Structures are given as structure tokens and as C-alpha cells.
Image (cartoon, rainbow, N blue to C red; front, side, top):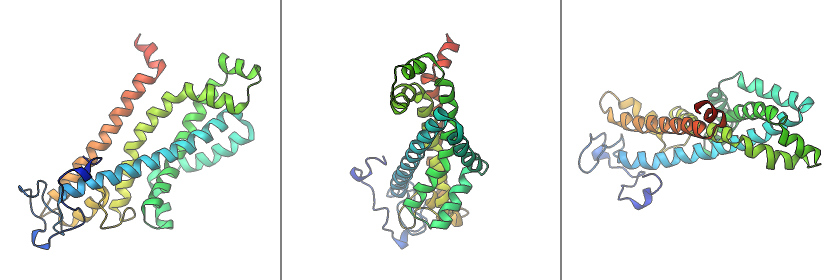
Amino acid sequence: MSLIADLLPLSNPLVGDLSKTLRPPEPNHVLGTDELGRDLLSRIVYGTRVSLTIAFIGATLGCVIGVMLGLISGYFGGVTDFMVMRVVDALLSIPSILIAIALVALTGPGVINMIVALAVGLTPTYVRLVRGVVMQTKNLEFVIAARLLGLSSVRILTKHILPNISYVIVAQYTLDLGVSILFAAGLGFLGLGVQPPTPELGSIIGSGKAYMSIAPHVIIYPGIVLAVLVAGFNLLGNALRDVLDPTSKVMYE
């Protein structure tokens, strides 16, 4: 629904009616209205689109940077590996959500700052994950043969190593989409993310928490959508890992 929201007969998520504030679910407003009389279904659908966009871009940026650093660190080792991993260890010692909150608090709220904060928070996980797999893969016969043939390091990394470890990256990326949605919602809930009146799941819940005693539907429905999104991506990530991981296939056989 969020992908085709413009084609659906939904109310304008930015326009409200103060005579219809905090209405419970009714025929004209299937999920009720919020504190400004705006249709809650419309705001949830458009807010989900915003949350997914931030999650996809942030997770993709963190994945690309982390994979590149992990490949370089794991393949070349030495001083490069030492310097990269010390920075990664320092970042991993702090919860990712705290890193994201600190960066957004320093740079100010906004979509771009949220995406950068998400990418920085997720990058260390990919660096450590990819580094470990590359250190195992670079000692296998096909990599040694490519090196003896005189192929460049860039070609070995991109044509031989990366395709053979892609299953790990894909599974982790899918899991991190759920994490990114939670990060974005957490920042929005704290008022550090997408700014009003633009709808976003976290900001919808954050603005509705003051009315939860008299209109619980304002936070229940976006909360359910958020939980379903995160659970869905987690289940998808686990399924992809089981399907793509060659070691799990051997174990099952």
C-alpha cells in the first residue's frame, strides 16, 4: 500500500480537520483520526513509505561502505587491517542506536542526517562480518590460483571473493533493514528524525503518546505496522540465510 499510496483513494495525510480530532475508527476513517483530525490510515501508509525509504537508503549505504572496508581489511591484513579494526572495535563498543542519536543530535534533525547516522551505525557490523569471511576465503584454492595467475587484487576481490561471500552480505542486509526501520522510528519518536507535518511511523507514535489514555488507537495501529515490518524483515533475513548459506545445505544433507 505504501508503494502505490498515490493511486489509492486516501485522504491527504497533511490536511486535518479540527472538528474531527481523535475520532475512533469509523466508516469515513477506518483507523480513526489523530490529534489534528488527520486520517490515521493515510498517515500510516505514507509514513511507512518514508520509513522504508530511510531504512533502505541507510542500510544500503552502510552495507556498501562496510563491505568495501571489510574486503580491504580482510584481504590485505597488516597495518591496514589493524587501523580499520581498531576504529570498528571502538564503534562496536557503543550501541548503534546511541551512535545514531548522537550524530543526529550533533548535526540536527532531518532525513539526510538520519540516513547518514544509520549508515555509520550499521557499517561496523559489515566490516567485522566481511573481514572474517574474507580471511577464510582468501586461503582457498581458487583464490590462490587466481593470485598465481597474476590477477590484480581488485579483480580477485570483485570477481572471485565477493561473489562467493555474497550470501552472508545479503542475509545480513535483509536483517539490517528491520534494524534500520527501528532506528528511524526511534529517532522519529524522540523528535530527532523526520519533522512534522511529514508522516513517519516513529513520529506518529511519538506525537500520539500524549493521547494514549483517551485515544489509544493513535499509537496502537502504527505500532502494529512497525512491529510487522521489523518481524517480516527478520524472518526474511533468516530464511535467506538458510537458503543461501552453503554450510547449512551440507548440514541438512
